[in-house]
Length: 426
Image 1: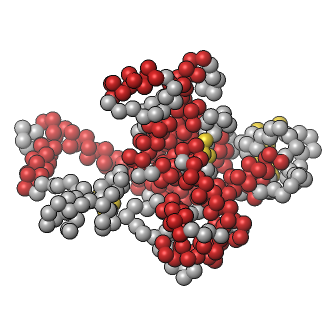
Image 2: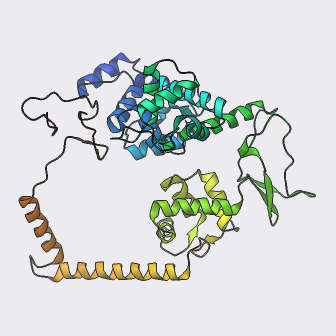
Image 3: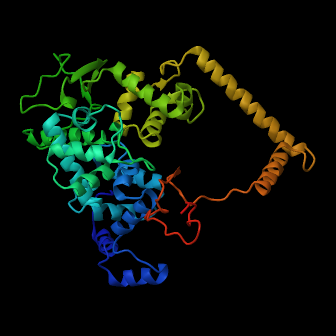
């Protein structure tokens, strides 16, 4: 398995860490430039795509904002950003302690330390990140915080240096082309806080291993009650409270404090925000086009494509909609009305007929008279008459603030004449 190490993996680890001088010399000869290790190369890719390692961690790597990545999440994240390399070797070079997960500290230690300091101070004095934002950071309740306001308020938490607070402000801000900070950009620290509390709670438990997977099927024991007895060691975090057992025939399933209606509503809201409607989301999950979604299709769509949760949680979510593990999920169980489903199917049918008619017309029409040829000719004439020039003042699909240079350094461009290079007026 991927976690089993051996002599071949150990040799590759030494090579990718730059301890093999022969390989480093060969790479420098072939590629012209060589990084010290595969970890440095991975960091360089993240900086070139997202501007900084911390921004890449928050936007691309840590999709669930838990603060840690396991190997499966790491593989999905690297695939989504287009990184090509030996992921297994890269993983073990970053996870030097073989803990089974990595955090921001393995990629950017100073940034992780700065964010952890703010998390600890904010939760210590105000209980949560949201309360700290409302009661301290955003005093005027405007929803946006400038750098000057941030430095004047955060200093009350115990920060002394102006440079430290300014660095923290830029680490928290991930929206390009803006100079303000919002609550949504700092709420990831609350998820970090909850993850660390749960990890600390598990370490205090008087056992060496605990299965807290809510999907675990347990045989229904005689005399089983409808609720689990509360644990008696230490204060339980919120995610461990109110555990209950729901019977389904001869088995029972453990759920956490959220009831099924809440889980349904949150998942449906996520689908509507991402796909526009439940009908479009159901069509995406129905990879076979049968109008029914099986559990493997549901797990693959929710865990792999949407990255909404892990496969075990996706299985539990499927059972919330459909109580039969071997059954199928219908559009009615997803909360789609008959009118919405019929309208969507009719629209699909009309679009299919239109595409088939256009294909037949393109095949049978004389040269230069088909819809595709006419459209291509019009686009060609438009490109010649109105040529588009690339803008050098755009990064991350948004205009840069005035005075910024091109990525990845964003250094100000020195004027060379009456007009500055890059499109900015001198």
